[in-house]
Image (cartoon, rainbow, N blue to C red; front, side, top):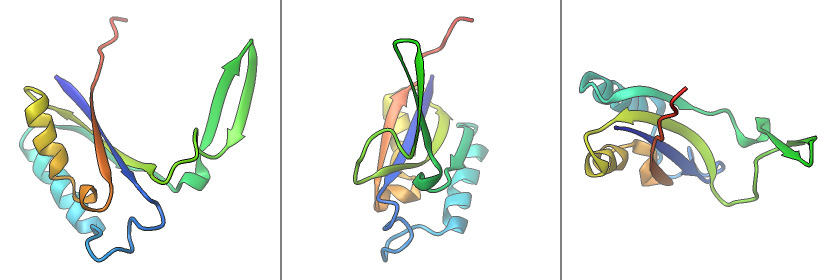
Length: 114
């Protein structure tokens, strides 16, 4: 089953806390998951200031600079993994270096039959 691990962090703190992960550690963890056959994709995101939110309401397109909602933590990146069950996915998510300074939301991917 596929799981999406969404990495959230306070953008201003992500790289400034003593326990903040550095890029080489994040790359090494992604490589370890990849070597185990569980990593399908992983990417960091550009700063939230580069985000654009799109809404369609009553047939009208609304485009707003910035994230969807004002929050203390922003989506910083993701890991798309393959795991046998939620427990295995949670173990993988717990090892994501950014979990030390933020949070990781784990959600099953719903397959679309296209």
